[in-house]
Length: 367
Image 1 (cartoon, rainbow, N blue to C red):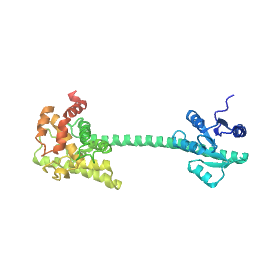
Image 2: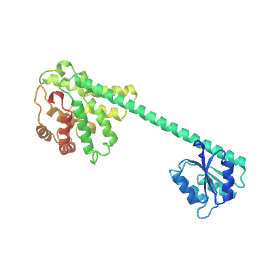
Image 3: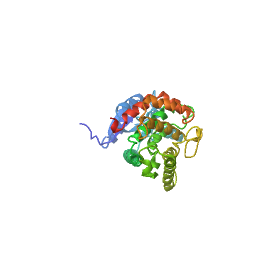
Image 4: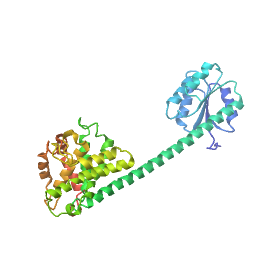
């Protein structure tokens, strides 16, 4: 008849049949028992019997002594958590120290006292069960934390997109601009992640942050008057000067968030850099700070390529939508003046990916 599955299982390992019979008779009323008369058999049983809860292990056995068996049990991730209790006639302190040093939880000398045996076995099985419960709770807690973190991340992403959309919807012509540009930025960053000039910055984690922060590049447009933002034609010089302020407004907006939080993080840093500096040009002729070359943040240089390409292929009241090929021709002329040369070269190498993104996220009226 099968023993109840809830009872702990103990593996007894001893090369002396009388010892095995004695231990089995002592333990059978409270525990399931398995037996092995040598170390090799014991290890085979452990590999095929995952429910073993404890090993009672003799030290002095032929071929493979108990110390080696214990060492192998502890070296195998599948069995390393099983408590090993040595039962042996070797009673010298150095023998006990060696056994405990190999990872055994206890060391009892023969002849065995049944009361002491039961007490030690019960204590170690209780500890093992407590560790199991704690491990299960930790796994549950980790799963809960992961789920809550995922929920918070989704909420943050949705909030970011809502803020970006709020800014973009004030401009009647932008459509899916934020979707396209964030995907352009990611595609270009992935292309450049192994480039010696950009490898340190464009890690996988940072590329994901760039992708998430890119939609905020025009958040400063919320500060631009409707009469300018919605003007049905080209802006005059004074109006354009006001429009240019959207970059400063965007940078200031993110700085206010950082101030409120009492610090910054990588996401906010990228968002601020992109919002403030995406209109800067490689030769220093951009705005708002006339930055040039590597003084322009990498994030903003990526956005400059993405933003200009999308502006070129999109219809505006003051211009038609250029074809992909026409946009490429115009952007080539900006190599080393408007754009970081290496970034522009990388863009040209993946220009078909930009075209695919533009098609995937084309505006509704173009469908």
